[in-house]
Image (cartoon, rainbow, N blue to C red; front, side):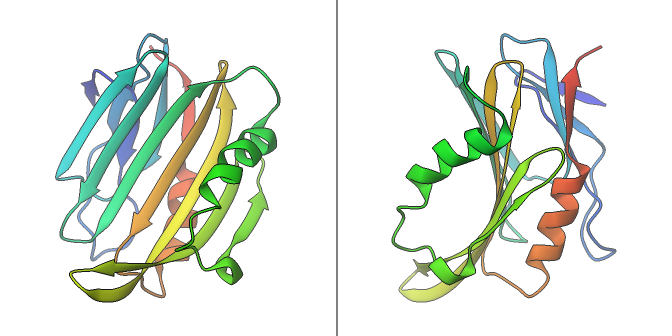
Length: 171
């Protein structure tokens, strides 16, 4: 496995037409834990720390797939409360198709799947999105997946990626 300075595992298990990666680990900065998730092979990624907050960004340009992982210090509540606070800000985005929002409380995380209407090079396109919120070790985590343009398979792919997520103490 590859270890990076930021802490998150990224691998791939989507479909036979998608390139696969080895498990990819990014350690949460200043912490002794990691996040793991199966993803399409990323051709670009970076992480940065802002005080106790951290951000990981990655993308597969060919597929139009993007991931962002945001971690903020957290002291009050579980996954649902983490999602509620973060989503109360994000849901104000006027590009979100309100009727597309699907919120689910899963065992490991709180999940939101939704569609954005956006503009790319002057053309209107739909972007599929999924956010997975969980609390671990006093951090509220938001793992956001995006796909542009959207396709009919995105929700299935996002659900598979979400179900593959895991986190815990490093070795």
